[in-house]
Length: 114
Image (spheres, rainbow, N blue to C red):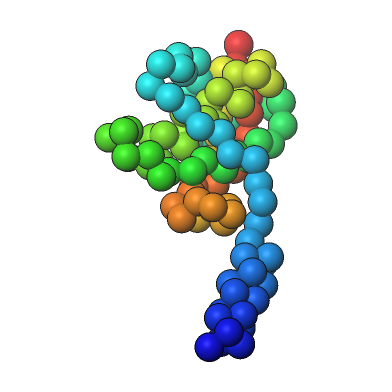
């Protein structure tokens, strides 16, 4: 009995060691989201500020918004801290974060549009 329990415990610990640890950003409804446009194409005269990647945990029962909307708000906040007022080339992927069963990863390019 003890050997079986030990085997299960070791299997669980070794499986969790393969998980990725990434910084999570949690938006609350009280946080103001900056105005950052999401553009399909890069406008002429826009300055590229660089790529950004955010991973957002979506295990929040108190937020009724769709997960992509919550994750996009996080990306907009990061873009605003870079001095951007627009995002382009936005891509959504499944996130892989330890202790978060549902997460979303967004990659995009931050732009400063005059």
